[in-house]
Image (cartoon, rainbow, N blue to C red; front, top):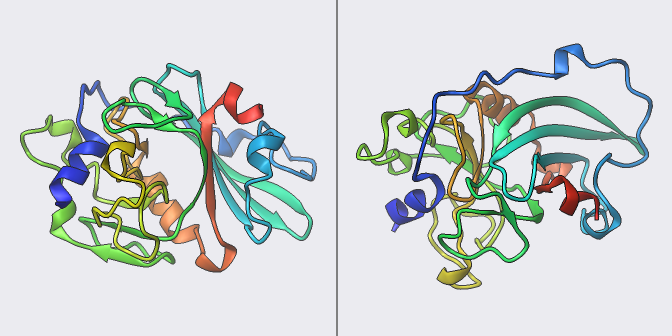
Length: 225
């Protein structure tokens, strides 16, 4: 059921909310990028040829919950970094073999096709399901009550074209699921990637199904392999 899916994404040892210091406003003018920096051939080869929007989650370390997240757009044959910001991933870091309850985010390349949340869509381009069923349980710490105000499903072990809280897991329950981009609560997650509410609204307004957006995510060493 949906509540089980939510608990898998956001249960908690939470600290105080992060500063979310942005880096996008201070970045120097960029040279044209033939490919996205910090992503090696192993994962780059899995980015679909028709993808023109890529969210990259640069994990600080294999066992770290801290990440830098960046959005890249393709213009003709070159890429441009549009923005970057701070965020979090699984509280125990990253894994190339994710399982339910390991509290690590899966390394990989995943499409982004569906969104939703407790709140109304802020001009979202992705199909968006608004429902009170996304509400985080109030027995969680209060800092997590707004985690699922906005979510974007990461297409890991889920059925594309369904609401993010659809519990169907094609690879089986043991492989985990309900892994989302969602609102940050100030620390690591159970496996999701989290960022500020304003960053979530920005992505929802920006990610376009016609651009076939994907997320490339992992710790920096795995990303560049």
